[in-house]
Length: 407
Image (cartoon, rainbow, N blue to C red; front, side, top):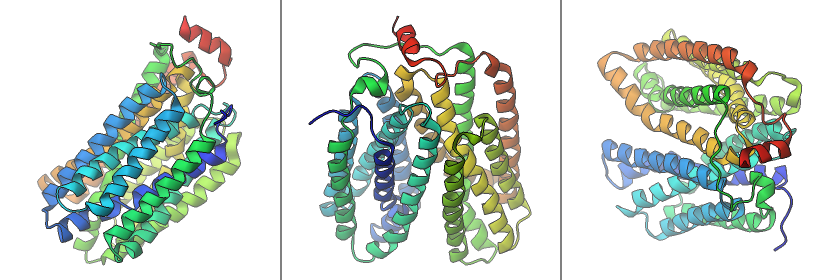
């Protein structure tokens, strides 16, 4: 099969869309299925979900490092194949203990694929990197929207049909990947995959990037409170569960709208750091508004603030990391982006539960606001001190960078 020079952006976006549709067929029903059908406790369900997230973190970390030394085409096919095989097995084995075991496998495969896609997006022509990340984040959200819309309908028809559909989806995904993702690995990673690399970031880049990673962990740790604990808080206030569900419909619609606008604006937003800071501020303000929220319009207002923040900082982060990391280490650092996100999500419910059990929901929301303000201040300070000395690898000459890294 003939190799291509580069993967076309539309095929990257299509792959991200299909991967997220497939995965959003599984994660929304896990708690309900394990508790109501398999008869397992919420604690057991929580442990399974945590193991799924741990597998995701491991895959993101390992996959990113291998990406820089291996053949991205083969690595991507491996991830799609593993996910497809796990979903195929779930058609026949969705009882205990096979369901949780295979769920952990899908968690690993999902983390692996997300890292591969981020690393590939970071390796497109540098004048298209920013727009590619925005479009891929939009595609991921559209995949989640369509998947979660369909899963309720399909779930009522039986688990065999649900996993048959996800398996079919990954088969189609595999066929697309076979023909469209077979590119010259040196054009993607920037180096011969047989050459071992031990690339060190410049000190200024190191300080900014690792501040971003720790910030990612904290942001997702706190963001997860919206996903895991807010529903209980709203029902305790006497609101029906459908009101909470509708908040995420608002979230999905606004994400699509805002990210479509950002993709059209492209490089007109000159400073991505400001976009990241702006987004983090709005996520913090969403928690502050929850402190005083007692009726449904206040919760809608808080969700609007959260969505504005999420839509602006989320695509900015991997683009900034791509700017600050050398081309022969794109996979490693994009893998760490995924790993810190997954780690924050996995510990979020436990963190929130401890705060709520010992204090209150309002204490949790206020703490989240204060912590995010501190994180924002730290990021502004670190960027201000280090940005003038940081190397932007998306502006420097590619061949010069590759030769410098391989010396």
